[in-house]
Length: 130
Image 1: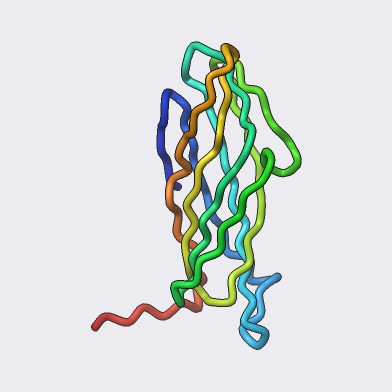
Image 2: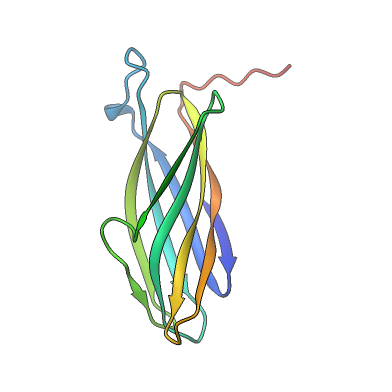
C-alpha cells in the first residue's frame, strides 16, 4: 500500500494487476487501483479535479485531467473518508502513476493534495540489473 498526507488529508493507494483482462499477445496490461481519501482535518473539503501522470516501462507519459473521480466530486467532513476503485491500461508489463487532486475547503480556499506515486507491476515483469 502507498500513502501520503497533505494538509491533514490522507490518500492511500492499493494497485492490483488484472491478469484476466491483460494480454501479452496484444501488449495490453491492466491494473485496478483502490484509493481511500481520509479527511483528518477540521474543515469540510470537496474534491473538484484530478490530474494523473501515467508512465509506462518505456518512459512514455500520458497525462489525464478531469472533473472529480469516477464521475463524483465527493465532500468529506472532518473524519470522513471516500473510497473508489478505477482502472488503468498500459502497453508494457510495468509502469507507475502519480497525481494530485484539487480540493476546495468549505471557506472557498482551493488547494492541491498529493496522490502517492505507485508502482504498476505484473508478475510477468522481468527485472534486469545492469
